Image (tube, rainbow, N blue to C red; front, side, top):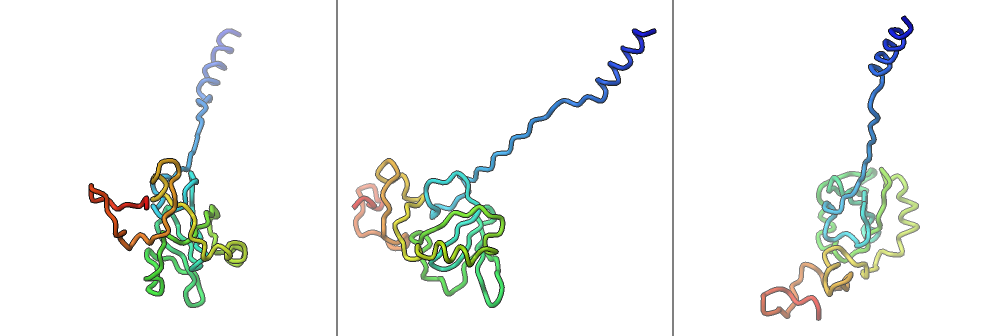
Length: 156
């Protein structure tokens, strides 16, 4: 009788037992980072551009900026930035969920980088081999020299 009792307990225990499930979540957005993003980051949620006081959401591909008396999020920058070169400006990596909530801190802390155009970006990372050299020319202006295979000569 005890044998049946222990066997029934064993079957009941097996019925309630669930296999353990391990969940691993790795959040890497290397492929989705824009070519104008800085080199050296595996994960980026937002870029803050102190030169124009704008945040860029990498995963949603949208800009957040102050307009009027509130923060707005749009897929394009407003017309006042039409001559702004996003490839040359300094970008600060922020992984806060809503970084504009701390805008005053970001502006105070990173405002000194507003006219810093020395940051290496992903587009230029592989030029000249390891890490490359940042080219201070605008991405919109073609270089006057070309190589024989019609590629722009960025090494001058």
